[in-house]
Amino acid sequence: MALDQETMDQLLNTVDRFVEQRLRPLESQVGENDKIPDDVIEEMKQLGFYGLTIPEAYGGLGLNMSEEIQVVRLFGHTSPAFRSAFGTNVGIGSQSLVIDGTEAQKQQYLPKMATGEIVGSFCLTEPEAGSDAASVKMTAVKVGSNYRLNGTKRYITNAPQADLFTVFARTNQAEKGARGVSAFLVDADTQGISMGKPYNKMGQQGAHVCDVIFEDVEVSAETLVGGNEDVGFKTAMKVLDKGRLHISALSIGIAERLISDSLNYSIERKQFGQSIAEFQLIQGMLADSQTETYAAQCMVADTARRRDTGENVATLAASCKLFATEMVGRVADRAVQIHGGAGYIEDYGIERFYRDVRLFRIYEGTSQIQQTVIAKDMIRRAGL
Ligand code: COS
Figure 1 (cartoon, rainbow, N blue to C red):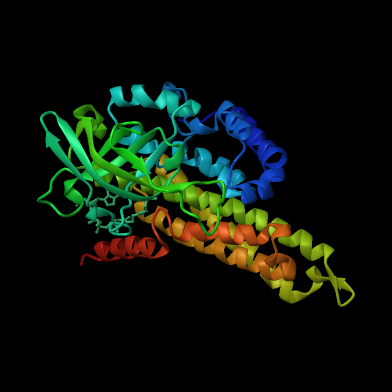
Figure 2 (figure 1 turned 90 degrees about the vertical axis):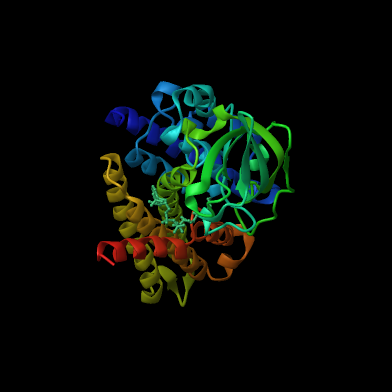
C-alpha cells in the first residue's frame, strides 16, 4: 500500500537532509577508515531506514517499489557504503522472508529487522556458483527432522555484521539445477558457522564483505523459508528482481551527484580564459550524462509502477539494471574526465565514486546475466 503524499514528502525530506548534512561530510573519513561511525548507524536505525520495505504490520514503513526507488535515489547522493549498511535489511537480506516466509517466520524476524536490531544477509553465491546461481553446491541433508548444512558462501555483503543469514542450499542432491535448492533462515550464532577475513575491495569502503563457512550446521525444519523444500531458487530470483530495481535507483542517484559535482567544477574551472563549461566538448559530456540519467529514471519509475500493480517485471528489472548500472559507469568516467587531474586524485572524491560504482555492473547479477535474462525472454516470446 502506498503512503499518503504528505508522509512520503516528509520521508523524502528527512532522507535528503540526512544525506546532505550528516552523511556527505563523512565521505572521505569512511573511505579512509573503512568504517561507518557507530553513532551514524544508530541514527539510521532510529530514523527507520532499516525497515523501509518491511511491511507496517511488522514495524516497518512498508514502502512499495515506487516509493522505495525515490528514497534509494536520494541515498545515491552520497557514498554508497552508507546505503549498504541497511541495504540488506531493505533488500536481499529480508525479502525472501517478506515474499515467501511463513507467518511465524515473519513474526519472529521482521520486527527486529525493521528496527535494525537484526541485520540480515543473503547467502547465495559460492566459490563455484556465481552467475550460475542454480548450481549451488552447498548441501542441506535431512537428519531426523533437522537439516545439516555444509558448504561455503562467497562475497557475502554485510556478513561480518549479520545476525541472520538467508542461506540457499541443495536439499535434493539428485537434482543438479534450480529445482533442488531450498532457502533457510539461519541465525549467525548457530554452531558450525565461521566467517572468512573481510575482503579488501576496489571501492565501497565502509561496506563489508566476507565468506561464510558452514560446517555441520544443524537447523530445524522451521528454518525452511515458507516451509517448502526445493523452491528456494525461485525465491532468490524474486528477491533479485526487486534488488535489481533498487540498485538501478541507487545508480541514478549517484549519477545525479556526479553530474552536479561535474557541473559545478566545470563552471568554476577556468581555462583558455573562460569556464570550461563554456566549451562544447565539456557540454557534450554533461548533456550525455544528464540525458542518460533521465532515461534510466523513466525506465525505473515505469518498471516500479508495473511491479506495484502485480505485473511480472523480471525482464524489465533486468533491463533497468543493465542500463542504469552501465550508465552510471559512463557518467563516473565522464566525471573523472571533466575534473581532469582533480578527478584522478583523492581530494575531490570523484575517483572514489568511480571505484564505488564499478560494483553495480557486477553484483545482484552482472550486466551479461541481465542481457541473458532479457534475450531469453525475447526468444521465448518469439515461440522458439
Ligand atoms: N521470478 C520467479 N521465478 C523465476 C525467475 C524470477 N525472476 N527467474 C527464473 N525463475 C524460475 C523459472 O521460471 C524456472 O522455474 P521452472 O523450473 O518451474 O521452470 C526456474 O526459476 C529456473 O529458471 P531458469 O531455467 O531461467 O534458470 P537458469 O539457471 O537458466 O538461469 C539466471 C537463471 C542465469 C538468470 C540466474 O541464475 C541468475 O540470475 N544468475 C545471477 C545470479 C545473481 O544475480 N547473483 C548475484 C549474487 S546475489 S548478490
